[in-house]
Length: 312
Image (cartoon, one colour):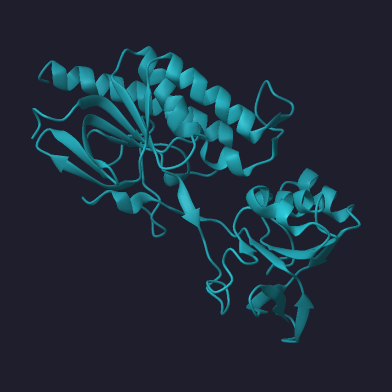
């Protein structure tokens, strides 16, 4: 089998900022590199309208930064494969990566597959997914022109999405279960000063209602237990992500939420497997963190490939 399948020095799972940065540095190191990404390269950059905290760009569209990173990675020879990874396992001295299109072999793997949106798990959420319920304001916001929508969450993403949606919606409810937001203060100030946004703190969404399309939300105030119905045709859920670390079939050390533990070289507990970006246990989850992780992971992969090539 190994004689029939192309073997890469580095297989990078995930084409977000971490994965594309790893591809750039792996390519510069003359490593044979593949990036496996099920969608368009860019990851969460594609779900962010404008980026204002990436060094060198005071303001740049998420899709534009994604395109620049992709182009840079391709310049250094990285192959970008549009496939969905389903499993990573050891195959003798190599890693076998199963995908929707077959499988690939790599001397090392950099897992930078990010995470999947966390769901509320409430009645109506699944039923109205794509018919009012969304996990990406940038993707779906334009469908709600002059309508009332709601955003659930209290972090940077939720607050940014609430502001973004006021471009289309006539009104935006920003619903958060706690009494204050976790978002950066500059982002909080924007929602507080936006007349289209109504903030509901200490509040949770209990149910999504409608017929063919979503028409209302049932919300509950945690302090009093009072329940009321809000008219809304859209619900944007932004309460976090679960890491896509379950792709690793062998046990890799991780925290209770599934985020992989690494050392400073981005090495996991499995030799030759590196982790970068949102799949890795770390304090912050910014684009700059992801780029740094990807850089270090690629340099560590180079060192690992050289060591095993020399038989040491």
